[in-house]
Length: 394
Image 1 (cartoon, rainbow, N blue to C red):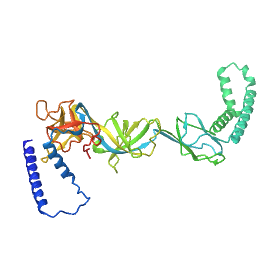
Image 2 (cartoon, rainbow, N blue to C red; image 1 turned 180 degrees about the horizontal axis):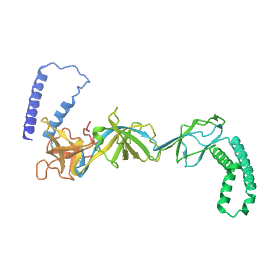
Image 3 (cartoon, rainbow, N blue to C red; image 1 turned 180 degrees about the vertical axis):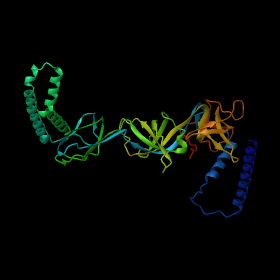
Image 4 (cartoon, one colour; image 1 turned 90 degrees about the horizontal axis):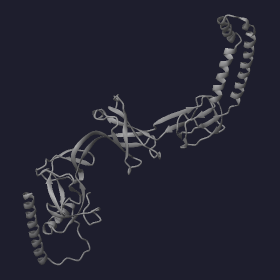
């Protein structure tokens, strides 16, 4: 600190001497023509001027913004690329051929499990069912006639054996199978939702002829939605199921979504050296859609009971010593701070109580507008540094 004050004092003297020399030169040179142009100062020159002003006017407070140093769990994250997928997806195809009699849904419509989606014309299959029912009736009559005299048989085992053989010799067994198959085929003309979800990729219209196997539509479940995160093999060992994940979708850059790790694939892809980590997150309004890309931060470690401050509070001197400013009764107190682990926004402070490197939890540290202030300089805490006339952090 003493060296910094000495250097600043020397710089102040040089600026004053330069000003006196400039004044004398102005007295001797001819008066220049008036001009409206005012040369702009660089950022470095502005910082020097502000520092000098503060040196001579330490009671003029500088607008700054502060944040509280907290003792809390520091969460470290692994960053990776991600892509949204439907939680469940079913591509429905026609199980029978025929003309599409009705389409009961439209794309993006919410449907319930078992709800009728598409009806294929039933005429041919209803007639076949009626024919099978008639054949079954004839076989039942033949079967009963065949067993008319069996009531006089006293041996139960003998009666049961004759009845079983009669089912096959009269064609009753085959008729029952054919009737059940015709019933099942008729039911297949009704295309229903296998689960609740939304309709996607509707591919047919009423009156269209479809063959068995023709793709009709897709049903997807979007709440919750599944996000597939590709994590490098070197980082996946730090992850666990149930950990938090933050996702920033490219289509919605102003919103950060939070989910949890559902599963971690035990296999590493040999081509990309990544493992698929599946994250689930709520999606009640279906804003997130399958196929959307995102940047993911997956919680890798939780370090409890550490003192941490926003990374924007940290400044660095010319000799690479890190420091911050603590707000105390309208003044900025310079404190050197050794740093520990950090995430995207917060950094751990390693100072010990009772030393000059200690920042008390609950203290207010300056995080914006503190680029050119000095130790013990007057400061004023504000919500918006720019509005208050200060210099916001770039």
